[in-house]
Length: 124
Picture (cartoon, rainbow, N blue to C red):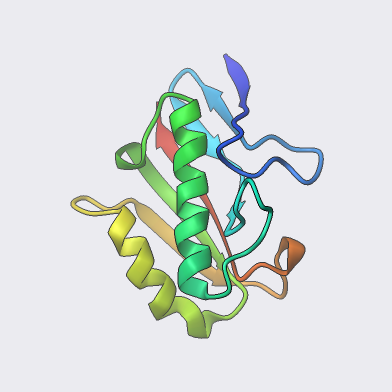
């Protein structure tokens, strides 16, 4: 089984992709920016954008019947690696106990000039 995930609780795709895909066992989210799904505006700080990006991830996971505590891998894309500590402070509020595996990389630019983008893989 392969099924696209669609929810209005996270920003819609801004290109030819899905907010996420679910299979029989896993949920794969597309990268979620720190954008409000209703206003389409970014929070002004890395902390605000990280929080919103993770709330968007959570919404996509829940639309597929999964949750943040079932995440096994995350990838964090940062516009500026100097924001790592601030991002990590917010990130740690969403993942406690046995935290998922994670990669964090600095990129030259993110869509719509965001500061952070986060994608995850979770168990269904």
